[in-house]
Length: 342
Image (cartoon, rainbow, N blue to C red):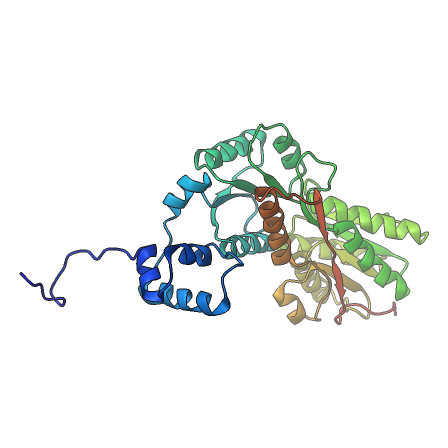
């Protein structure tokens, strides 16, 4: 008995690789090569297969593929402080690069950074049979904890410096701080303070080291450093403290959010930026160009950092590992918050 296609409510069969091959007029081996991005397929054939895939809504069977390749096509991402601009955008870069390479991402966000919490997250990933783990946990103790664990899959860490047991990708934070201080020295400043991030963060320590090294190289005192917590609120509080008793004519701030709070405090205290005090931030958040005044910053490309992490992971999985550490260079972006001392 014939069925009416309009009223037939039976579930439709999902399209198979063979259906794509039939519609495109090619072999199923050719479809497989296109799906797996094999370079031996001509552009014309690839176009026909991709059109057939789009028409049918075909999705490859990753479970079946995993049985053949013994891979889950899943990357675990271990993160903390994901509400912060840097870790969040690094995560975005990893996720986009993984998707482009045909991988899924499974995220474990740590509530606390401790050896036990890291171990639990790693076990969670291994239970999922992830192919590798990307670590975006910017605390000093993280790399030490990972080095102690018998993980058994490739691990790539943001911030690894090459001397650690775990390889990875980093922005040259120390060089970024040096660029900021060298710019201020070049404008004639000799009293340059630093509002630092929390000193249990890898990046914050490196930035403070770079600030100190640049001042000492110029024969200047590195004696004004105050620690914040990355938030605009801490920058605001420190700004009022400095307004009351600081002789600094320039401030290098550990991130843009603290710089935002600092700018407000200085404005309320009647201290003009940059006429009275020059300010340099770090990160180059999209809003930094709209601060009052627009903020001179050290720019780091977090999405590029995430992509480089995934590139390193894919090289490990492909059996062609490269250098243990890749370095992304920072960049000085000049705006309106710095000027020669008045």
